[in-house]
Length: 379
Ligand code: SF4
Image (cartoon, helix red, strand yellow):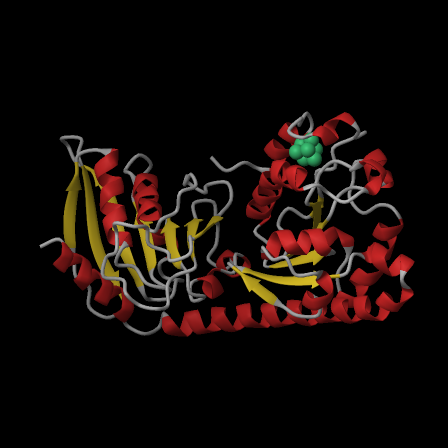
């Protein structure tokens, strides 16, 4: 079950997963807007942060606050966390074993906040987020796309305190961040407009058929078999009351796509991102998906807590649906009028004899084609 920021903070408070717990004064979890559009990720707490239990409050933090204004941001709008939550003695570099122990917390923070833009400050954060060995000098000043995130590597603000030649580069990068934010906002507004006009078009014909499952394992197996047919930008809307098997079906789809990490309902997160392994499909499930372009991720949305369809734009839903991933959308039927009209709808229900029924239909050309393949695979 994905955890909230509060639950994470409670576990971190007593964390002893690595040796830094012996030398720290406090655990520095992170601070800021829990729904931030932009998340900053630094390296590790320094002396001031270790004493104050908050990231970026020393000289580097003061410098960061000044630079933020160049991007049109204030500290209260962003969220800041570090790769390591405890201070390494004498501010030495983080050790690989410490990063390995602490990084699951950062991953959970990113999932909980679901920012649109991640700014990595310095080498360690950049290498961790972009999964690269390249140094910050060769990566800064460019926007990198990883999964649903735009990532902007920037020198650590402390670097410019010791090396004034870096100051103009830092300022350029914060101005670039401001332009990136504007671009992403304009894209979201455009997508919202487009989705509204798409939705005024009559959907193409639907085809319907049902399958019966006698157990959660069977529901998973059905999901896994369907996953083999899926292609980039396919959208599956899962509908059905609690207990009808939506999450079991989602687990099956994830298994079929070769995702080994645990898949659970994203109820508290709105969106969970599962990166697909290279090659996307596991051995033994070669399947008919022979396109050279394979999906890069599985996006698992849960719209249960959304109150209005306008919030879909804040979630960046419309961009994510067309960025080459596969999307599973639980409770998506609540907002089907506001969604782009191309999705496979899977209605789950419990029959009187306790077995589960899965009804499949499609709206839109791409999903209809997938449904026809799926129906043929089950004949
Ligand atoms: S650095 Fe991270 S893993 Fe190590 S003790 Fe601190 S919180 Fe735990």
